Image 1: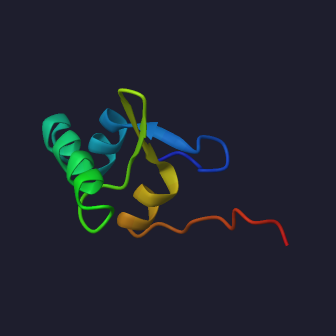
Image 2: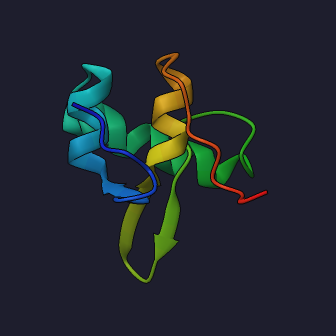
Length: 73
């Protein structure tokens, strides 16, 4: 299950891989591709030092799930 972005704003690459149904290796490769292409391709991710985190909202959008409005009106 993909978490609610309001509760868990980022997820590990391993969690994202499981949500997308791809291998851990492939998910890491796609995260690095995202960084190398300045966001043009790959799995959206954020580099925090040597760690990579994937925005939960990005994964929810990739798989076609509704994304809660994160901006209060």
